[in-house]
Length: 346
Image 1: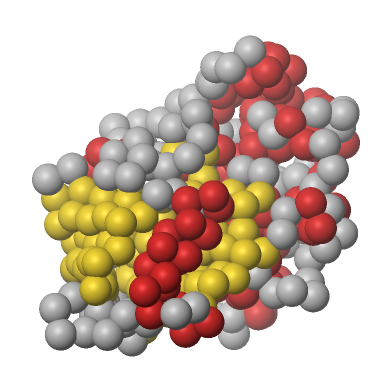
Image 2: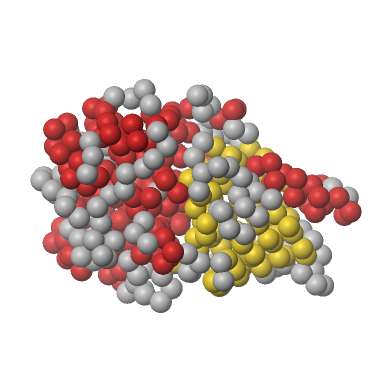
């Protein structure tokens, strides 16, 4: 299947381009065919204003919106896959209600909901927000207990900043049109979402992780996610980019209950699993995927992959083609267990 940019057009809508009586209808029509059915109601005393850009891609749907004070009810998202929906407030404030839970989102905060359930969101005037839909199976390896992290405000500034750059690029009319660059951008968005999921599960929410060490660790993790497949990724190169010592990097990860090498390896294996389960990589050989994900030794890749997933890469690919999924081994804290790091990422 081709994924050239022209095959997945960018939809744009601005309420002031339509007569007042037609504005809500037009906005709803664009979102319904691209993202999900929305019931939009202006807040009392507020005149309606809405400006949005949307794009539906394989494995990802994105929308960036600026609006007046409104109440938005989203029905079940389009598609047959169970989906995870990420909502981030860039400016202004939002309140999400989903499954009996409520999250208040300040600027720079993120909340996760399920696509299969309706969500009610109330936005203050002049709020800018983004929302992304992604099949849950593509990030399942990064999630321990999904119910534990739903509808909670999460502050993950470095991953969110990186995510915004990708969203802006994917919604730019003159960028990311070639199939290979478009596919790579979507894959990177999946990885950044996995990092935000990690932030949600390891205490980087609004209540925790505000110290300089936690901020530094989040920045380093975001850097690793972006460069996980590079053969040049080492603790020394990371330390140099962040102007700290390798020893300090090790201490940050040890305080998080994981080593630098384990985190790098987990990112590479997660990327390999996503490629193995992605139909767009169906023609790639196992060895090509391993090398693309930063592994220089195929036997080592097969060994650690099987230790994590309890199955060979071929078995995971075959299971995905049959409509099932193989989850990683995790401990009670949701950390990946049984990984042999060898020299990877050290």
